[in-house]
Length: 70
Image (cartoon, rainbow, N blue to C red; front, side, top):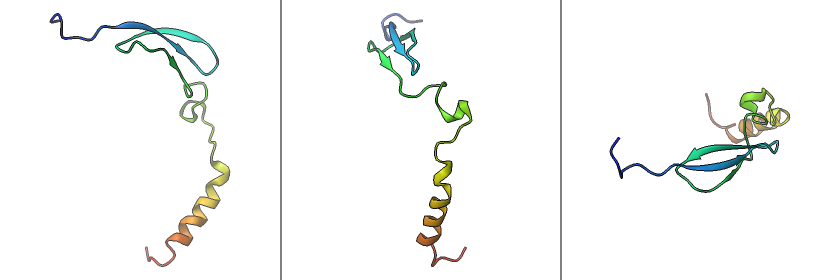
């Protein structure tokens, strides 16, 4: 690697949603506090937060595009 062209890597603390703190290296020097991670994101948990509003969204779509023919 060439010297002088790469950013400096600093150890930073990352606070997860459950309160655990991990140390990683980053070119940023600011600590992070996560609001979403694999403990509460629906992509990993399989839970859907908006499942109850699905029918309402479909009804709004149908009323908005009622004049169009698909």
